Length: 226
Image (cartoon, rainbow, N blue to C red; front, top):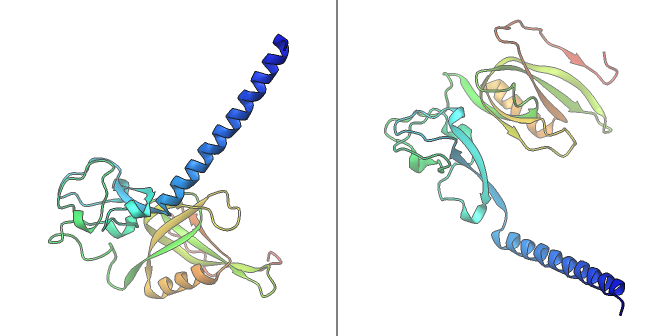
């Protein structure tokens, strides 16, 4: 066999072996994923936190771990920990849950006043602008009877954001610009938001300029854009 043929044969053998190795790695990765099972999100400390610290949104982060390895009692929603005090120091990346809270001194619920509720809604919005302390308007687009959208209405105005984080993309291609926001609202508005989250075609959060408290009143636009 000539030198050229031997080189071609060796190259072909290398390609075959490389393909087999890649296939074997893929099978092993699939087997590992199957063994680990589904993933879950747990709340962790974004930085080192001292004992007695009252938790704020900037202190918390989410981490995806195999559900079977998620610590018992670890929180899955950062909003559930806001305003609570730590019983002991927690290092950066440490899991946070009921076991790390000072039950004797923590607050008895979300930071809302009498007659208010902390309502969570997931909708389209800019994660870098919809942050705790910001104020937003809420637009709701309703489904029509035959599929197309029936219209969009200005549902809520000048609503305070208590907590917010980027959320995963929905069924439609929205470019990943979805936000899970906890809003300070009345009981009636909380019920409305829950219904809109379940039945509306789309919910959109519009950040307001700082200090802008002007109300626009009832606004709605139908499919004919008027």
